[in-house]
Length: 102
Image 1 (cartoon, one colour):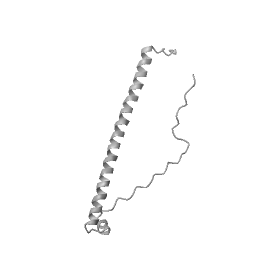
Image 2: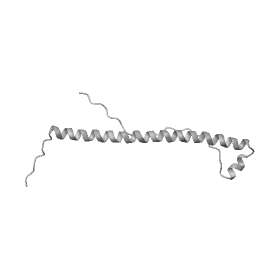
Image 3: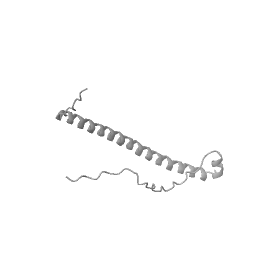
Image 4: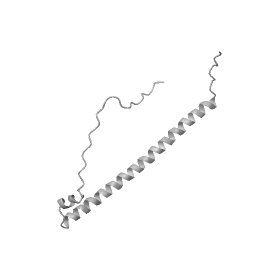
């Protein structure tokens, strides 16, 4: 049984590996940016619809509907958003790498 020594990578091997890693980073960056754009758009749409709903709900109240009547048919006012609390830190989150000194 003979052990074959590992082959020494060539400059082309190193360049190909580095290019593959960069390409993967680019692709994942594009995906997360596209999803963020979709999320931002969806949030804007929700905010617009919530404002419209509040106006329509108020118009219904002004036109002789009562809040109780509306609630009885499943139409409820939009509840105010509660403030989010900061997440508790467990000390196990992602840590950034410290730059190494040259």
